[in-house]
Image (cartoon, rainbow, N blue to C red; front, side):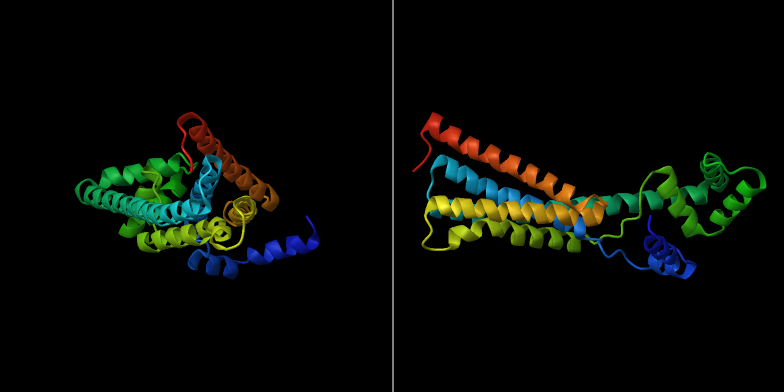
Length: 252
């Protein structure tokens, strides 16, 4: 590690910087929702485009099917994300209520749970008892510790509505990109498909690069991996459409 990077790392770990970072909300809180929506949106519309091209449908049919799937699937995915996060929040709240009730009914049993949790982490003797006393002194800290340590749940800070909106908007914006060449007049079907292919490939690669911000992966590797996944989905749609045309006479 270079001296400059080490110095920057040391600056990030000064006490006041750490305190400010822990207090601040996550800047990338809804980025995973947007990435998920963007990938699914691009896969959805480009799969429609490739399937229609493989089956020999006209550009108009591909555009209509693409827009219909873009709106319907985007709405469905946003609602699913909303319900999933809302259910997770309700589950955590239910566990909190249960732990509060247990503290009222069997406080010593709950203290013993805290004691054994931190004993398994390596605390012992007087240090262990001070940890137990400190945690159990504050009821909210006590409950949250039980939620995270006993049940393996993390406090849910996400807003279901905001997550759903982030998913829906990313789905629409990114998913609309492969359809743009089909909305341009004057292009023959093959050129429209190739242009859509190029746009979709660029979207997959850029989304993969965005994933590296969340999951801390190499930028190029993440971009290429997402591109390959999207390409595989598009290829499957193309051959499905082509097979349907050959076997069942589906087409213009």
